[in-house]
Image 1 (spheres, helix red, strand yellow):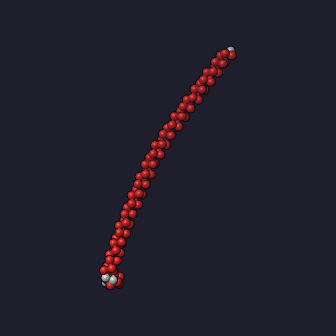
Image 2 (cartoon, rainbow, N blue to C red):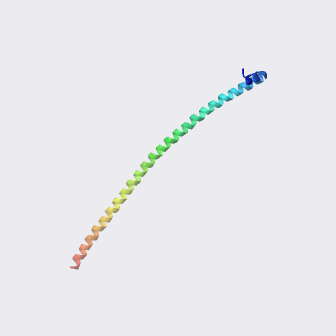
Image 3 (cartoon, one colour):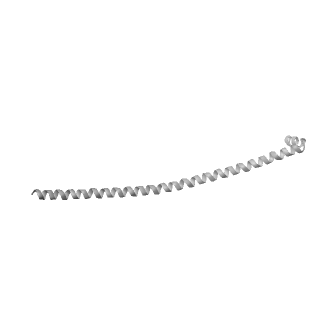
Length: 99
């Protein structure tokens, strides 16, 4: 037997109880370490899933904004074309009136 075991046995019931408590504490610490490791992994997995969901939401938002900008550009182009046509028509009417 090693010296630690001999020392605990020399103290009788109190030594054996101290050894049992030490052993239980070691086992509990191992279990807590494994639980903490699993919890940390679970949090990391949830964070990764959250990032993927957030990227999906951002992509959809960007598509909506892009579509909205394209519509605004088309409306603006249509208004500019309409104003040019009206300006041309007014110039033609003005030139007819000046004759």
